[in-house]
Amino acid sequence: MSRALTIGRVGPGVTLQDEGRAGYLGFGLSRGGAADRLALAEGATLLGQGRDLAVLEMAGMGGDFTAEDDMRIALTGAPMQVTLDGAALAWNASHAMPKGAVLSIGGARTGSYGYLHVGGGFDAPKRLGARGAHLAAGLGAPLEQGARLELGEDRGRGTGLTLDPGERFGGGTVRIVESFQTALFPQDEVARFTATEFRRGARGNRMGVPLEQEGAGFTLEGGRNVLSDVVVPGDIQMTGDGTPYVLLAECQTTGGYPRIGTVLPCDMPRLVQAGPGAPLRFVFVSLEEAVELERAAARHVETLDKRLSLLLRDPQRMADLLSYDLISGVSAGDTHKH
Image (cartoon, rainbow, N blue to C red; front, side, top):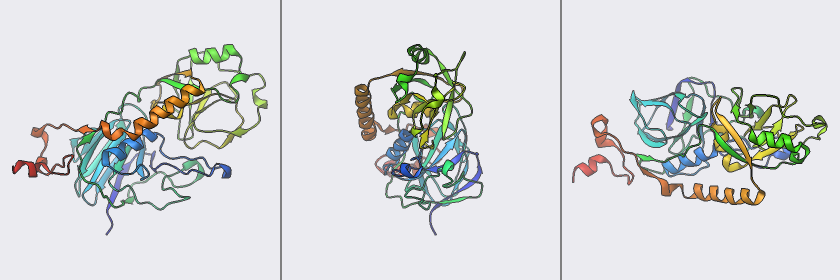
């Protein structure tokens, strides 16, 4: 019988996600995939496996998950309340999950999207080349209580690793480049946009999030006459009432709202992980600066394994100390014998 994880109670925004579907923009399908792609890479690094494997994305809260077999797990993204058979677990870390154990993941402490990774990934059927749900396109659906999620073959071993995710869960400054319509906005409106401290709106989803601010919206004379053209995640559209709206992973592929700028892909994790009400500011950078920033972000992802460290635990609180897997794959029981 195949290895699996079964779902007990579950939050309304829990879906399977992966790197998404490239190559379908011409058919009206955006790439989709994990909202925080850096968290996807961090989990893969913690488990020593590919970034293309499917994971559970949890929007705001998780649920209860029971292991049908021994497995390895990792937790990344927005830190959430989490226990394994009642014992607290560290976030941004990898752990052993024994057969029959219940993993309980509650609400986010900060941020918006948390991720549960398993050794071997989730072995769901592929649709248009990917396993992840694209809710806006009707591909897949939020996971429900009672679902049984089969796992792929886990070729790795070892747990007990941790990774510093940096400060990206409380909002902050987000870097943007000019869009096709930036020059259409009056200079004083662009200046007011970069001088404004926004708050992430509570009505956001995987298609996009509104930005709230004090005072009047941002207007563009003749903005409703802008022709529809290609839009991408990170584009900041100005809606009819002047409210900025940032497009996310499941955005449409074309749009007619004028765009004042576009968030750099490397800053999207900070944008998507800003929880409701978190402060956000925007600063323009040149295309040359953006290219260098993207190169640095790519190097960061490729060298994540160099940033791994051992997860320190209190032996007095570890009932399973002798079965705990260390970084080398040698158990504490083995080291105890010598």
